[in-house]
Length: 227
Image (cartoon, rainbow, N blue to C red):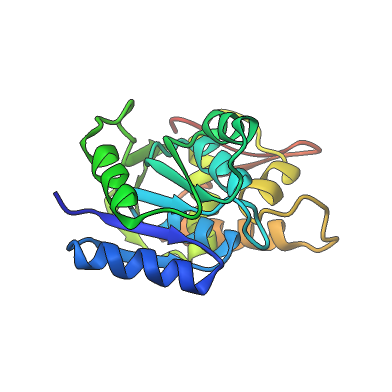
């Protein structure tokens, strides 16, 4: 059975070795050389498996997987790393990885573990369509509709709306948005959130429809579950 696989590995030789070997098995491969690029690809495309190095530049593999799990993703993850201690393995598995293979490795073992993960049933079924307040977000097609009318969003606008809808009925603070949409763990002292909220509102309020995104003064933003 063939899969779409994302390899997130900063070492060019290892990344090419893994990608080329899996392509020869017939799988479709994408690759990323750092954690932030890998996280963006994993969030914007649907993969059957992620193969992730733990020691990545920018965003380490452990933090990357934690962010994916917190967002509701159940995509299988195989850690590929030189960190071979028992505590390292436990930490990786507890972060949300499904398997753990240490370097150096034989490709035959990697191939066997990939096939084993493919055969393993998902613990949960990922929700592919989100709905709130007349909005419908198709996570697989990366499409947004309001009252069945298609709305064209940029990738950051899509992530922002997805986060708000996943928390429909709850107040979402500016800090939460900075951390989960932009991955900023500090205040950039700009109006980046406000600017994107304004643009998103203008795109969602097609035909003079009422606002879906409410500003909760002194607290943050909220999308109601129904309107």
